Amino acid sequence: MGVNRSADGLWLETVPGRGAPLFQTLDRYFNSERLELLDVTERYRQWHVCGPTAASHFPDLTPRQMIWLGDRMIRRHDRLGIPGFDVIAETMIDLPGELGDAEAYETLRIEACSPEFGKDIDESRFVMEVAGAT
Image (cartoon, rainbow, N blue to C red; front, side, top):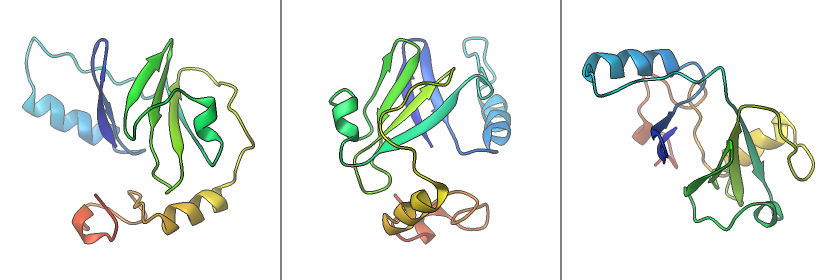
């Protein structure tokens, strides 16, 4: 989840399944002719590339820094406790390294105390109630 600046404005990102409630809230509070909300959820896909050699495949970014390279957003995001990058693009791209599996991701996520909406956080549990959340 986060907010990033792009050439066109702000890029809002949320967890899967929470886009519609976010748009409803923003539409209610930001009803203005000077603001246009676009839902591009169906156009973009996100991949996370991480591991000891991940940084050698991407630009030198500080944690949470984001840049656009052509039609791709690259963001440094060390959410699993190891160097990592989020890649957001409209089409499937070639990613460096080997693909991991869901079990490895989940193990790294838990070890890094990186809470996930729906598993660790929901409408009845606030972020500050989850250990390691920021």
